[in-house]
Length: 148
Ligand SMILES: CC(C)(COP(=O)(O)OP(=O)(O)OC[C@H]1O[C@@H](n2cnc3c(N)ncnc32)[C@H](O)[C@@H]1OP(=O)(O)O)[C@@H](O)C(=O)NCCC(=O)NCCS
Image (cartoon, rainbow, N blue to C red; front, top):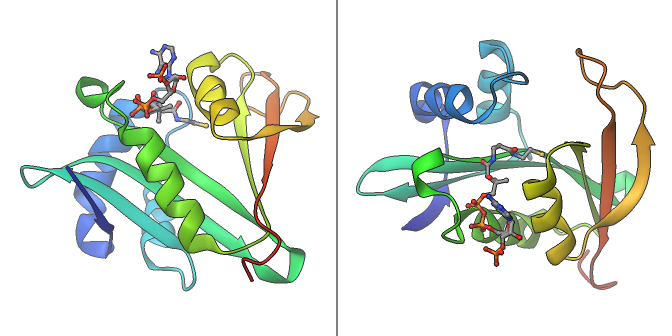
């Protein structure tokens, strides 16, 4: 498995991965195009035998001092093998802001466990953030002070 930059050529594969990973929160095509093309966005894919098995995107907001992990997903058949952790760590390294934030469904305990292991702590709760009324947990990780 290797982790490499993604580009607009990965649109179809990302669309498939999104549908496999997010039954309720899949992005519309326009957002997938945006995440694969907007300047400054860190976009990485995990590839095994030529297939995209995972994806992460991070949006750096340097003037605010933090980045957002916009999305992260690993195909069901490839989970629990360290791919998500490796994608997250590689993305954080490339984002280079003092803090990194993300939001996650309150019920997504597997993802929350990963984020806690990786040093994220709860910063806020956005009540009824999702369309079905579920809360979002906002988590933040403080990084080394000298990353900028
Ligand atoms: C969350 C997700 C990206 C994790 O990817 P992954 O490749 O399976 O993660 P890893 O193998 O690196 O696992 C890292 C840690 O996550 C946690 N974790 C992941 N899946 C878990 C599970 N099924 N049960 C318990 N803990 C789990 C564990 O803490 C695990 O560490 P461990 O294996 O040492 O116990 C993946 O489950 C996924 O794509 N889920 C659907 C999309 C999603 O919810 N994305 C996050 C939105 S905020």
